[in-house]
Amino acid sequence: MTDLMTLIKSRRSVRKYEDRQLPDDLLSQVLEAFGWAPSWANSQCWEVIVVRDPAVRAQIQASLPAKGNPAFKAVVEASVLLVVCAKSGVSGYYKGQCSTKLGDWMMYDLGLATQNLCLMAHHLGLGTVIVGLFDHDRAKAAVDVPEGYELVSLIPLGYPAKTGGAPQRRDVNAFTHTNRF
Ligand SMILES: Cc1cc2nc3c(=O)[nH]c(=O)nc-3n(C[C@H](O)[C@H](O)[C@H](O)COP(=O)(O)O)c2cc1C
Image 1 (spheres, rainbow, N blue to C red):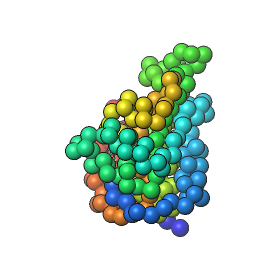
Image 2 (image 1 turned 180 degrees about the vertical axis):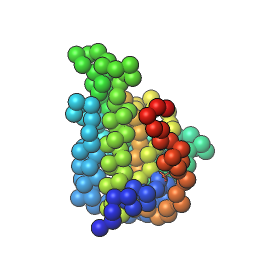
Image 3 (image 1 turned 90 degrees about the horizontal axis):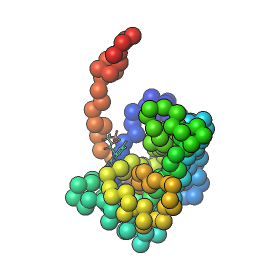
């Protein structure tokens, strides 16, 4: 079994996928990992839409800038497209009021769940890429996200056809501070 550090370091954003069906049990495991993320007061504000319908995927793809997003093709080519949404006004709130100056913590919670999902997918030999650059309102309309919810990210999921090299990371010493910033 791959150790955790190797798994974390070898996960890459995958933008080219094989034309191959994703078995349901693998999809279930990936979604289970997503749902086991920690969240503000265990609020679990997340919702995931599994999109297979090519027509819906084409509509979602139209919300991405064709030239400005390297994940443009992955949105329609990966075995499935996961659309990650969140209920707003829950994470980071107590009795309807923000508990901290940082407002809604849904992006934080979704980030944690998303990394669980991406690492689990990688562990199972699958690829993912988190897609954040697109017209969110347009994508939201394509999948009927109701009021009170935000569509946050798109995650193509499938068998990798090509995996790029690792973009460099900042050295630990460059972001770690001791006692004060
Ligand atoms: C919040 C977020 C949004 C992202 N949006 C996009 C995107 O719209 N298109 C894309 O191709 N990659 C996107 N990425 C992937 C990053 O470019 C990628 O994670 C980064 O370059 C590091 O590469 P690695 O994932 O292979 O380690 C996004 C990643 C994150 C975390």
